[in-house]
Length: 358
Ligand code: SAH
Image 1 (tube, rainbow, N blue to C red):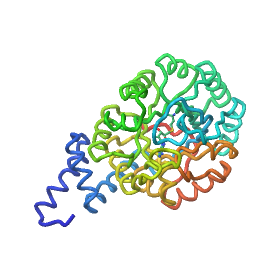
Image 2 (cartoon, rainbow, N blue to C red):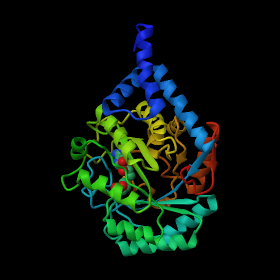
Image 3 (cartoon, rainbow, N blue to C red):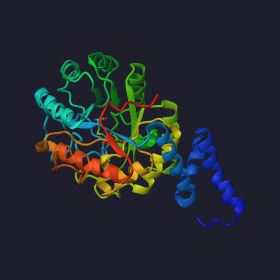
Image 4 (tube, helix red, strand yellow):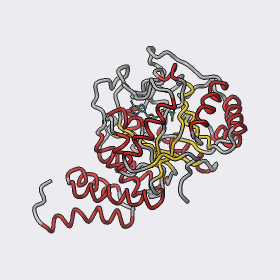
């Protein structure tokens, strides 16, 4: 944007300053903030600066790690953007056994991981009983570790049983806070209201909850992103996962453009200001789209990385989108590589559970 006069410059800065002062903006104000920030380098820098200040205030230079275990790619859902959706016949399906999952934890523990994230498609094989058995075994073997689940929508009772078995955290991206966009990205059986309900159930049960969304999902507008921000402020989750949409060749969105790195990074800074103590990962999708994407994420206010602990032999099969990184390296290499990358940005990778700041 060309700044025409000093008055206009101040007016533009005002919305950013208002946001920095009191965090609460209306949907319309968030739209204005996004528009101005995307058009004006000074506003963007001001937001990044504030995001980094807050990140340092609450987390210093520490970057937390989570070991991601992608334990099943079977899924009963058909999210139109996702490579492992059920109607994709070209995916070779797999599930890890409890022993294989525990072996991932063991090697992860040796590498310094103190959080294990069990992520998968919505696989009906993993009943509450089976899932609770896995959680209990991890809890017994690794009492000093946090157990995070990311296995989609389940009933209140199911979430309750898994919590009781020892799960501490749950990641369930809301995907989008706009109902119309949600309906365009998912088949009719997937209800917008149910996903949000799940997030509130999880909070009620005392999980540390992670919500989140893709940036640049097909059909997404700045208004939709503004709604995501309003929703996040209301939900007040402990974690927010934000990554760019990346097309997968076997989906209807195969030739859609990927989300923008700049926009993703801007949203990371905005979310850091919106929820100052939030745990904010520099996601794998960000690292996939841009070789220094995760570094850019860290420089914008992110404070978490989630290297892959899944066995290398199945990594390629958990293909949510094309060209996903780290499908070849062993966990140790991934972690070592990340440690170097993190240090280059002036931060340091730390062991430990990495709970949210109080
Ligand atoms: N079944 C679990 C885990 C889903 S995979 C659940 O429902 O929560 C984790 C996240 O990957 C999704 O929530 C989605 O936001 C993201 N994802 C899926 N397909 C993607 C794509 N094509 N590009 C970028 N991110 C994608």
